[in-house]
Amino acid sequence: MDYENLLLDQQDGILTITLNRPQALNALNTRTLHELHSFFSSDYRSQDQFHGIILTGAGDRAFVAGADIKEFLSVAEDGNGTAMAHRGHEIFFQIERFHVPVIALVNGFALGGGCELAMACHLRIATEQAKFGQPEVNLGIIPGYGGTQRLNQYIGKGKATELILTGNMIGAQEALRLGLVNYVFPSKEEARARAVDLLTTIGQKGPVAVRESIRAINAYYANSEAFATEAQAFGAATMTEDFREGAAAFVEKRPAVFRGK
Ligand code: COA
Image (cartoon, rainbow, N blue to C red):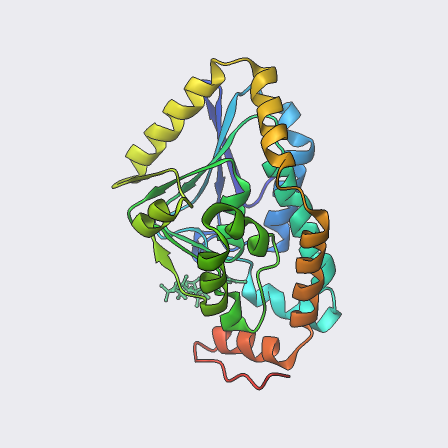
């Protein structure tokens, strides 16, 4: 398909995909999710052979600042929250199960769906400016693209629960300490060089061994019931007045007042 929001660039067998909506801090709208789905399900076959992917965000402020909140409000109106979460799960599983490694190069905010997208990648390399978090509670909802599952997997239940319930952000060094990212570098150029280095090393290994390693590692974490619970819970949260209030407060740039309804 023709991409509006993804930029593709291939050099020396490494494909860089840049999420390109910097005016919205690269927030994931329906179109961007559709393009990711199209790429990871079939379009990748039309690329020249590549042995690794770097996924990053355009501009110097964000990797991805989450799902597109402005578009989100219509979800509540249509009652499609659960379906939306299932769709996100499907796309992020495609990335997690991709046959060559995908490295998230996190150059700023990785919040909500952005943190979830980075976590669906096989490795994460951040710049010092990177910030991670699951701020959905600020909107009266919960993570819906696998965050309740994968954050546990990377940093353990205690810290994952703290971050999901408070919506607090953590910086790159804290993310490194917790095991959420593999490396932190002062600049995007240095972070990118490390990503290229790692993908070049992996590209020299047996492609079948790489592919099967990814498949076997993922098998340990495949709990479809838990993901279905997240989708259902996300759907329920999007049906509340609290979510309407939270999303409206974001758009109006004011604090939300929740009533538990
Ligand atoms: N969806 C839609 N638009 C978003 C967005 C999102 N998730 N995140 C940021 N934007 C937009 C803002 O609305 C703003 O647009 P505007 O210039 O038309 O007003 C623009 O991107 C810049 O963001 P802004 O909030 O002005 O920048 P900031 O430096 O003050 O704050 C953040 C940066 C990331 C802390 C803040 O944008 C934020 O909290 N974003 C939402 C994060 C979130 O809750 N994600 C989970 C969604 S489920």
